[in-house]
Image (cartoon, rainbow, N blue to C red; front, top):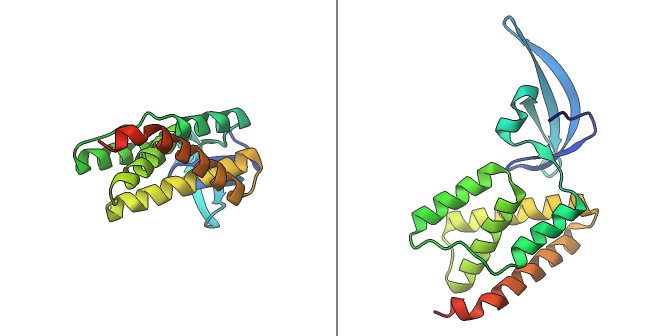
Length: 171
């Protein structure tokens, strides 16, 4: 996928960034092209090799239609459950690494539902917070809304999911 200066992109696990420059650098005999992007939330700069964008999961910000799909995933009452903590944490870590926003939404939903039943471990709480941050920042960018409005939409969708699952959670 080709990006150009000014494109808003998502760098998995870091959030929304802007392509500031496309540069070429010599490393020994090899000349490589890089995207220099600025991560909006931290104002940090990341260099991504142009030929490596697919491998690292660099992608364009969601469209408005995709925002609706993400909110639908959060609303829907299907939640992956795991009996053991390690299996759950491993599966959620894999989903977070993919950079797929629907997978991040599934992590947020499953950990939010789980937190209704029992306290989360420190590592799961951090993952929940990270998934929430990534979703809010990308959905706000994609829908051109403020973070507070998007957070309210996400909370409403999660509340709807939990409400739909109340019978299942009590068992």
